[in-house]
Length: 455
Ligand SMILES: [Zn+2]
Image (cartoon, rainbow, N blue to C red; front, side):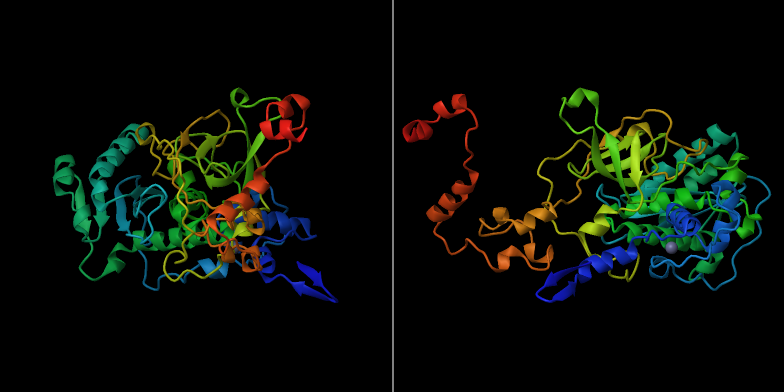
């Protein structure tokens, strides 16, 4: 927490800030377990956590009155207008839909909007990330087909606001679907999806603040929040979950982990030798649609994988420890953007054709990681040199530093050491001193002319 300087111990405020937001392991085991589930489930209220106690195998006398430093930052007050509380009698009699966005910072894979679809009967929710609003032209027919194939049902009516992109009159007429519009300037009439949007954003913000993940991953926060919301009981549904009403069985909770935490994935035997590490440090990014595995971000390569064999350290949030981005979001997420150092080598892009990566929730299966999955995807996540390098002189040699060293450490070495005043020749000489390596065997020595001369 601090360090000694003379006879004083200086409190390192940056460390203090990061630790205060990571959940603190206390001595009370039941309180610790409750807090762990609070994080895993996207920061539900104490009341909802109490309802889930039997499913989570929490002690009945465990204290669920949690104090959480993330919740006040993330949760907006509920909308004040009366909501539509009368549920339809049958699945897919009526769906509500709305588009959110554009968000001024696109996701790492280029999405700026999301489409939310809510089934009125069960309040089960589907979210699709969109690059443009016109993407709904392809998503809606796919959604209608999914409902037909997976549930053997037909959507009878759609409710939306007056967004022109959602006025798919040709499609609806062709399918015999009724389309109800809310009146102009009265979003209250679209209250089901409006409230759902607010709930999604509340949970997504909580996941974002909890993990301090780069803002380019806001799409993963949204997708994960919907995955969790569908598994949280609601008083409106008599304390049942949307998942339960849709699939007629309880969801599984045993595979849930804290979003954004540190995890380790096994390296592939084909790519390692005897002394290679057996696991790679990664960050947990959620539950991919259609895979029984975890979506994880490799911290060294910035690539995204879906992996089954993952070991989690749920009390460690790597981005929380590496940055101090704890500013309060003024709209959806924080305005703060990562330091921009583009990844030099483009990675292969995710294959969207084989699954529904935008849909946060499976229509038929409760994915829990039991079978091997193997999808990899490229990521354009901005990267920066490891923080520990900022205390060494390796980035001081260039007259134009690759990143803003002054932001990465409280007392950067660059404040006191600089090579900028050296001539190009002497700067190159200084660097070369550091890069000479001593040969360790006679065989390696005799092939180097300078060493031959020295001998
Ligand atoms: Zn919380």
